[in-house]
Image 1 (cartoon, rainbow, N blue to C red):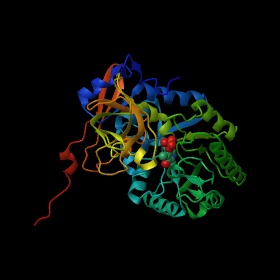
Image 2: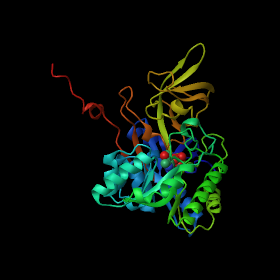
Image 3: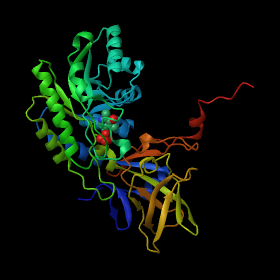
Image 4: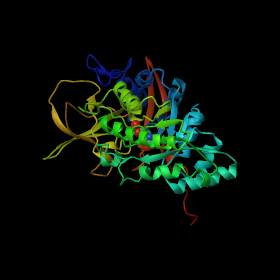
Length: 418
Ligand SMILES: *Cc1c(COP(=O)(O)O)cnc(C)c1O
């Protein structure tokens, strides 16, 4: 099957579901993120079907794409959420998501965020240090509430992914060393306002093999058995997110195989299994639509300077990530080797190197696989308003975030009095 069944050519024009991308550019301008509702729903259903009638909960990782319409769509499908800030919790609530299906991850939860999450009665805090556990216990005591907790353990397995998105090695800042976890779980007497309910890990992102998940799962199950033999009651295992997507020619395990591998590794544990997929749910459900502003030939290189930049899609600049770049209208002509770059004043500002394209000024391009860690990592660097976002649903286009205006950008700044 095509990687982008919802983004296909008809004759020479690239479509999102039933809508030509060219008409989206005309109506909403560029740069513009375009998502397919059908792609998100189909992928969510694939996860659901893979679990069949197990006790499971899918907690979509909000940081991958936190647009309210995306969260609302997933909430309607029954999804829970994995949040990493109080801001993300507010988004989940605003989008109609259920706090009781929400887990809170992150190494640096602040006191206000913890209070907000306790007040909202979230499902679980994925705690990453003893200091955090102490603070959580203290705040819960003051609010006279029990805080539900999983320790996020660091299983020390190599996710074999980009070092910036590998999180489960012992030198990473994430989690509690797995050898220390048992001791903490057994310290319930010094944390009277903590209820340990789960075990959690998240070893990295964009994993292309199942083996690291299996290794981490085994270590979690070992720990689970030790805790159960000490009469601790654990009601869920959370294996985090991390399943990769195909950006170029990677071979990625299917969702079915991934879920089967997790279920097999955990065995008949009579526990609820939680996963926190981000990228694999939304990555290939979105693209970034951009227009060529200039073609520039230097003695060395040919540049396509487009109206999207690293502030819109940071992944190439940050991780040297590869995104396919497709012409929105295929045309005949001379193929040239382009460096596709943005207008931002950084040499690191590029979307793709060495792309063979037939291109002239004003032509539209689609930067594929941009649904995850695209808009959500966007910034206003170079005082560039953030892009518009639309969701296509069949023949209908919904504007789900209007293009930012310069006035909005500078509204909270003030001049010195003199
Ligand atoms: C980012 C993150 C995820 C999602 O990772 P993906 O690779 O997008 O699936 C899940 N859990 C935690 C704790 C994360 O930080």
